[in-house]
Amino acid sequence: MTSTENTGPAAKAPAKDPWDLPDVSDLVVGVLGGTGDQGRGLAYRLAKAGQKVIIGSRAADRAETAAAELGLGVEGADNAECARRSDVVIVAVPWDGHAKTLETLQKELAGKIVVDCVNPLGFDKKGAYALKPEEGSAAEQAAALLPDSRVTAAFHHLSAVLLQDPSIDEIDTDVMVLGESRADTDVVQALASRIPGMRGVFAGRLRNAHQVESLVANLISVNRRYKAHAGLRVTDV
Image 1: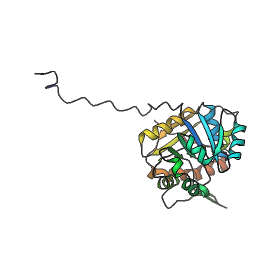
Image 2: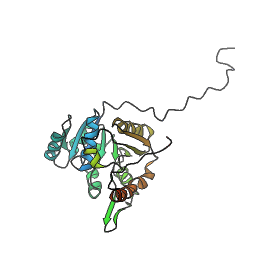
Image 3: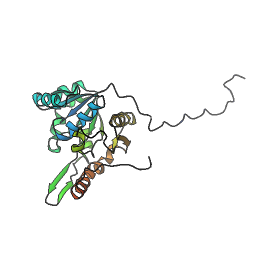
Image 4: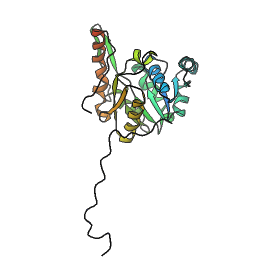
């Protein structure tokens, strides 16, 4: 009898620790819409955490100006160059320019992890309210427009005011991360967790992105009522 006979079924490999996230410190992060408040704030926080960051804009000179103002080694480029040079690309453009921006960058974003943080919202005299794109959500629209990219969704619930405030050392919030590939969402969780005070939490597949994007309308109401910059914490994980 050989040593491999009658040894019983092979033991199952231990389940992967959901908090065992990859080292992302060497990844280059591009921020499309990096001259806007949300994109600029994310670029600042990631660069401050030691990430290499490139700001993208339709106009290269605007991106270069914003990058120079941020410092921290941040570079500026037009959107296409930003996408080409980055490993992970955060989409932080206004909702009304979301589809058009992505349509023009299909080639440059092919094979990249794309992190959509756009919130489709409308505003009237009653305040903010959620819009529902034909595809279901901004993230699903991105996935439809970028079939060769690895689309995820994250960074929706962050206060641009807090992100850009240099006097604040930590951002007290969780970041809900959605996507189809656990390897890709692990990368995005790890990026979020590099920012002091933040934690990336897996929150499902892209089909669940609409309610995550929509929750921003509720947070806007919270902020107006309580004069706050509210974020989210997920308990018991």
